[in-house]
Length: 470
Image 1: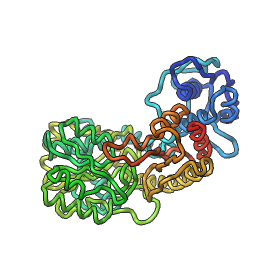
Image 2: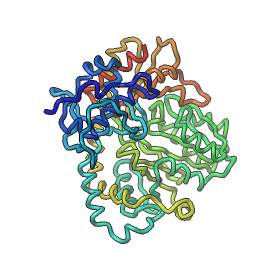
Image 3: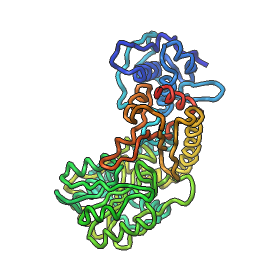
Image 4: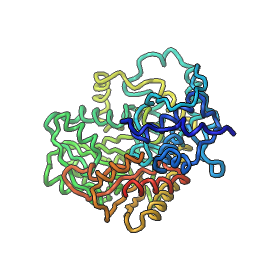
């Protein structure tokens, strides 16, 4: 087993404007990249490294967890944390002298407890790489041309088959558009059924990006409150009965996690049919439900064709793929084809081909099963660790599904924005609940994603959060 580099090779600069988390992350990443940390090399224990560098142990834990999520480190129960076997130094580089020279930033920051990310360490790299390599070798002339603006037919067929089995949605491939994620689906929906000045219902609290996007397009946003049954449809009908679109997350409402009740589902569909309005169902994390029966997709109940259904591969594969899909009401399929021709010339063919083959070979279904089991275990481990460490200083709201938990701190003397700021300084990235609200206050709390907190790291992350919040 290779010995770790000297502690001074990982030293941080306290006069730097860069955070301690970012500096340590870049030091270790750089040591792996130039060969000072070879595959299989053992890293210092988090307690030892924190003591030697004079930083909080939670900072070291967060950096190790981030690098593990990126596939660079592997945590082993009996041998500690090592560099992932199989990694190789960057081409053309040789091991450098041990020095704390700064390495360039590698891209956006990623931290434990951060919302919106799947488990990066669970990504099926081997089959994905194998499929990509085969696709590259067999790339046909047709695949080198402009893609179909509606999406690769084989991928749309795979999506239709998947939705029929997993969500009870019956649709033709002509109704499916492959998109650049949910944002693209939202913009296409707006182009098809909205004009500037139209009223739109959005959930409050809710997904801020959707609210900002629609407001930027000149729509009149009606922030409809959410309770234990989900969107308060009656409130929306009273305040904005002529709204043209309702944007909802009925399976696991973001950020509260509640499911839209059967009664509210009927009310919403009845409102759309009676008013000539539309519903955009964002089913962003429907795959991950841990107890009880998974709520039926709203689209599966849509007998009057008023629902757009948006799904995404960002939460099941990788956000960087920028791949999603939109199921259209059948009467708008032709208009969508025309709109796609004018909006852009489609999504990158190579990634569509890879995802289609990944689904066809059964890897996608196996990957989802693996993630479900891992997420259920990770959620339980993180919740147990938080309750042990915080005691009566924390109240955790658990829902039947989703990718995060809501933690409230009834004895905190500062608001949740300040709590989130303190956590960020320690290399953690929860989100304040209050930041998701427009008009309706749901109190204070932190949204904590458990997807990238492995079970063996749960106690360390809980300790880091405890120390950060004070």
